[in-house]
Image (tube, rainbow, N blue to C red; front, side):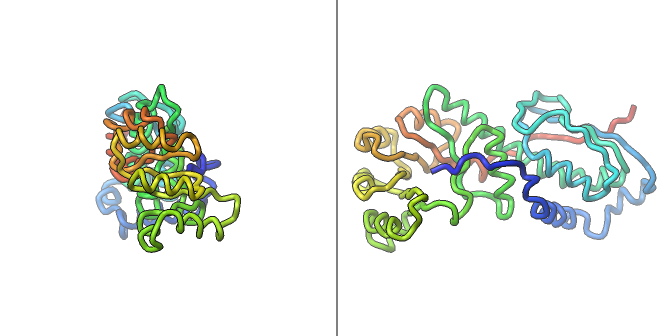
Length: 289
């Protein structure tokens, strides 16, 4: 039950992102960068470039540049690529110029954010490419870093994936614990149908083919097939007969996502996009000539 790509830019979050970045800077700087402040006068200027030691998909430009602006508004930044671009190794994505103290004080915080978000976008792009030749779409989940959800979900979009619900407030997803507590798939779907607005689709998680049949008969709009084998996914597609949308989830990774998509499901949701993506190897180096 994707909600579609996040509209606009992280810029629209305004002060929310600034608060996160300010907290991250405070964590790293404390009462000041004692090394840099001992070596460089406030007037000292420097230039730097940022690039990857490996190919990657760019994401997180706004937050990266905003770190330096929060430290010193005189820092000048030149983006050399756009979020969503596939960037070759050793090719600069930013040029920076400004007070040396600001550039060095913000380097680690800015790179930590950028490496994380580029890692998510890069893994997402790889998984999207693995879906080629199918009509299946790749979704993220709510398994995100606390308070980083907007940034990480936007990174998924930059990689070509789609956003599932943003939180508990914007979509009905009846999970296994809902079903267990109420005593069955059908009663849970019926209860939700009675209470939620007609504009909201109802998705329910099932763990067996029998529960799938129950969910379809109960009128679910989307059924999440949790940890189904490839054989059972194919059976689920046949049983469903196009009556509702099917989403496969559970333990899906880059090696398995293509095979899962080829079973005929409509969506594949993958928590690994945001909880297990490897940070991209990025560096910021001073220009000395």
